[in-house]
Image (cartoon, rainbow, N blue to C red; front, side, top):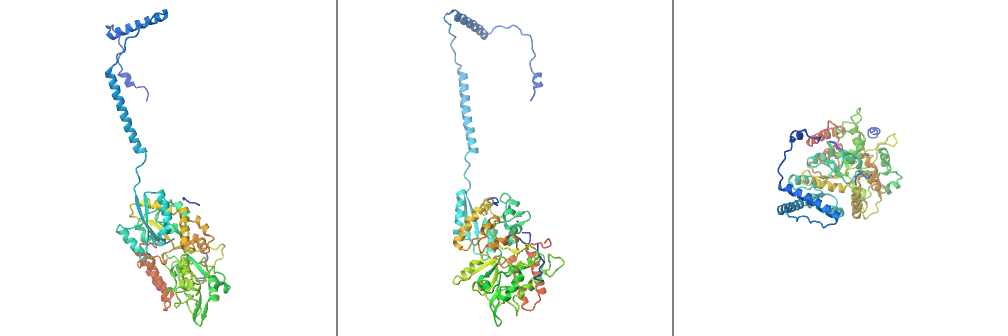
Length: 530
């Protein structure tokens, strides 16, 4: 992310700014030292010369004898030079020894390599049981017999603090899962993804644009996503059908649906149309408001009073005003007296909510004894006159990273490359379905997304993924009370809650804006470049 947000590759406008919210040659040297030619002087014959003369005479005699048919004279007997024989024998033995030494050296260099060093990689996960991971771990072990992966599922409670403390003590994992919004908090603990694992262009082509934006700092990426997730619109199909209400695709449609779907008994809400307008009892309220502000052009990384339309400064005011109306009597459809939005939806007390895909499992569990008929759809968008109308969606997902203090970073990255291969992802997904039934983790690889197009829960998510954005308002990231998300969400929650006490929206946002600036400074987030 910039400071502020968003098997090799198998296969990346905004509408009206929120009207609905606001409305070598021969050597001469050799020649010089050659001996001069002098006149030969007669010399006495040496014994060898006499022998040579005698040999010539014998040869001539032998030849003439052969011609006349006479018996040949045998040559003189051969006399063996024992000294030369010894020299040749010694040289031969030395040569054999030298040859053996050379062969041994060549074998030690080009023969079988020494056995690979045994390595154990500790991998901290969050959501997957070891039984789900075991299959792909065993497969990796077959091709990498010297690598052992010690997978440990962690408790989400105070996870980020425990992770950082363990790394600081030198007892942390080699590989760990972290949230996409944690990069500013964890970058000093993370090793950058090597270009040999994912070059920049390959990363961009493989994963969704939001991951490319969120995980990049400087010239490096700091994690590999194995999944994607974000906000979806959950709706009770039976309630909508009974009121003849189509699934809202815009915020205007949502306003119209409220009128038809809300059921009250006097002032008490019996059936709510949608869980919007408050903070305390709406799961993911901060994600929802973050989404709406992105859609209306709010530069969240700068200020609530910075808009993409430079002629405006009230884009965030318009959003919060619109959001709050869903909980303001007398035409409200939600209030603080209602139970948690996820529970209310699972019990059939609210027709629509917005939440990430994983909440489907929670809803199914709560409603297991009922016949709740629910489906998902993309979140509402601002109305526009363009076709197709550009959309803005919200991302919140988890990523795998390598500790900067790991002594086995190369091995760790090689393993993560394996986990992010299409074939491995598909095997993991198949195992996840065995346990979860509805679906597995939505694929982070763009190319694999099409294989989920017939899943009634994930199809809307995959269609929304290319236009997703993210910010540090992601709920349930377990980054701790002092974490980036938790700190910003607290200021936003205070702003929403203050509205019911008579505080103006402008004042509430100004107070929240000051709190946001302090948090940005604490985490070294540069807002001037946004």
